[in-house]
Length: 272
Length: 289
Image 1 (cartoon, rainbow over the protein chains, first blue to last red):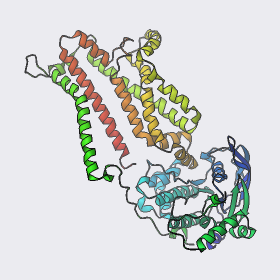
Image 2 (spheres, each protein chain N blue to C red; image 1 turned 60 degrees about the vertical axis):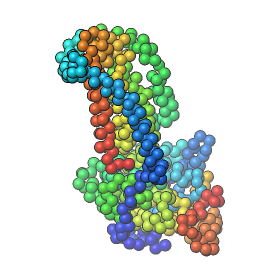
Image 3 (cartoon, one colour; image 1 turned 180 degrees about the vertical axis):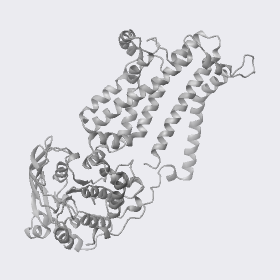
Image 4 (tube, one colour; image 1 turned 135 degrees about the horizontal axis):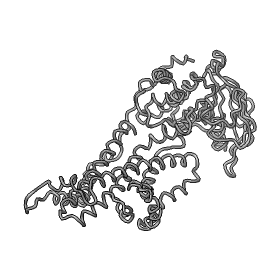
């Protein structure tokens, strides 16, 4: 995949950081969300977490972002142990599945929120926010409120907000199903933008869609709170494991005829 | 792949979502709904406005039948009691402001904090906040009397009533604020803010609280309305607020017109305050969802 190659070769990981998750465990009562999960993400790599619902993908991202604490295990980012560091000090960009834009702020204020917290001057902040909005093609919507723009546009604003953090030096971007609520065309557009805009940093992506994850550097198939398969799309296809099974099923489905518009792709949930 | 800055703009302005509700109805349904609204508003309007109209009319009656006079309204400022009227109005308005502020400072951060950080405590908080509803005011007075007797030794003013009023207003303010807090996904918003580097204080006051302005204003309105009309706590504790003063006038004055003009003035002030709060709320919400 050319875009992936471009991502890792043409732009050396200037601010990217290596991420190490070691023996991460997290329980919710009697439910085990993560069970001794180990994963290393190279600096500048784009890795996708793939798996059925409830397998621990989102929990992994939430632990990384500091939104929850791990029961056991260790998280290091760029060699620094951040396991017990508050979320506000972790210095990473995150895009949530539900967009999570602040309803009382305009699009511009949403993007500038992180910059404001870092006490960047108003003029500089506005300029930087507009720059980020230009990256996602929404500079004309800067003064609208989130409820005045479409779902796809809201998703791009969320991306711009996370990218603003990257521009301030964050080396890690977490994307929790950023295209889940978009149609296939919208997904392709936003994913191209994600790939382009996160070239300089390490990116961890959660997605249910094979059309999205096949383009990333590596794919970690998560099952029962641990990494079951890990490798590039080609490697996982050659291994003929669960990823191969699911991807083949998907390909056969599309080969038998053009899916109708709006028809959903198969996801890992079918196998679960 | 195209360079970052070369990505073409894809966004086209989204059409604002069509408002739901009346527009989605058929013409006949709309007519029936409108007719129902007019009837309901007329009945409730008469129910509330007739006594007010009668009160204002009586306050404007002159000394001779069939004549009109504003003498009773002029006496509001000059009525010397005992007890004098203007200080009672002043105290009541100050109590409304202090009670509202204390209420907001105590309840808003507590509710946001419980919602975001200690959700297991929310049931206990709800129980504590709604408890005053189940306690008759007279029981509250009996409980508070020894405390107020003690602090009276220090010659404190009627403003000390604000503690009792905060307790009285707690259930209404709590309900109004709960409605605002549950209308948004506070947890997700706080997570988004924290992931951008916001500390808890920023999350509470720059992200969550601004999204519940309407609920805060509703809580304010209920608190102000309650304080302006409060009698059952102040009277037994021998403090003079506006309602106690009006009661006193009704028993002592030979000119009942003062009573009606002062009562009407109180209601008009209360309406004006509530309208101002409502207007501020609308201004704050302009352009927002």
